[in-house]
Amino acid sequence: MFIDRARIYLKAGDGGDGVVRFRREKYVPAGGPAGGDGGRGGSIYFVVDEGLSTLMDFRYRRKFVAPSGEPGKSKNMAGKDGEDLEIRVPPGTIVKDDETGEVLLDLTVPGARVLVLPGGRGGRGNARFTTPTRQAPAFAERGEPGRGLWVKLELKLLADVGLVGYPNAGKSTLLSVVSAARPKIANYPFTTLKPNLGVVALGEGSSFVLADIPGLIEGAHAGVGLGMEFLRHVERTRLLLHVVDAAGVEGRDPVDDYHRINAELSMYSAELAERPQIVVANKADLPAAQANLPRLEELAASQGQEFFVISAATGQGTEALMRRVGQIIRELKKAEPAAEPVQELVLPTEEPAPLEEFTVTEVDGEYVVEGAGLERLMRRLDLNNREAVRYLQNLFAKIGLYETLEEMGVPEGATVRVGELEFEYME
Image 1 (tube, rainbow, N blue to C red):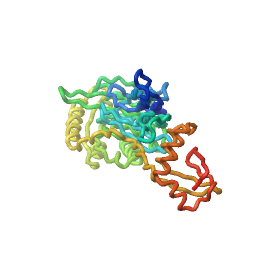
Image 2 (image 1 turned 45 degrees about the horizontal axis):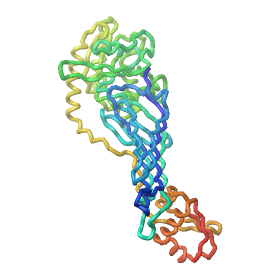
Image 3 (image 1 turned 30 degrees about the horizontal axis):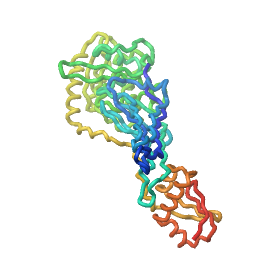
Image 4 (image 1 turned 180 degrees about the vertical axis):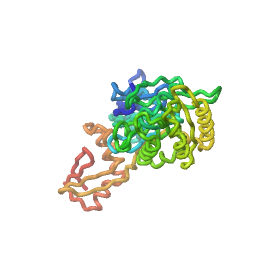
């Protein structure tokens, strides 16, 4: 089954909690704090796997949660980091933010391993809060929670050449003749319900990937028929083979077919309409095709496009066509700029804001202190622990919070709120 869309939930691992521990050893009466830091939570990576060709694996598994880091240990030993989680996707996968639709990743390079969500940072143990005046701290930090995110995955096939044309123009038959692919072939519209890939081997070290895209009809760019589902699969191709039923078996005029398909490509993407094309007149073995071949050749010449006459059913002209296609693909690849190296970190992580950056605003007689760095720190402290609160009070003095409140003329007894912590202001 070909699956080319999926919606999944990603959750990086939470950081492990720091712990409160003290040395308890014989002959060491005052061993001091020895609580270790929590381990980092597991990060989530996308890995581009050449062995995959669909998003089928995500049909039954929708949630991917990386393991959390372990809590710290005694003797100043840090907890074990959570194991990183690798999610394997086929080349050509696009990752979008489910909420905004923003493209976060375009994964095209086989073997690329890209960090998506870094694991939460582990909390610091009590040994990290020792100072000359606080030699036995009895508090530690909680681990930082890992970030969660819903994303959409979309697959755009990576093929060198795309076969486009009306249903039953003979695209699937051509693919089966020139490659080892065995697509479903029958005499009714939309035989091809999913893209098929085939490798055309022209000799040692010379091959290209050919994609049979389901037949297009008028209105495909707006979602009529199977159009919108599959037009995106030709976006990455370097060359288009425009297969036309020269015999008009379905009762349509082949020249009109050519113009209508190109109109659909143009309305879907102006860039796609400019892609190099070769006009391929198929079914040349049928008598009805002979009257249309000169018209199609003249049409191709007027568009500056090469023209080939073939019969996919008998194999006539297919070898010459494939050799010419292989030559063009080699030339196009040489002219392409070198691929940029894959970014190691695509989703930016928030840099911790300085604790000194905060604002104080009056709301209904209360004074609310806001600051990203300050709030981030407070989320990691146990505010039911008296020593942790005392540590915060000293910190407020260091970063100038009390001085700011005094300059604002905050009256004694007024309520000051910093995150979940409330206290009465005293000069």
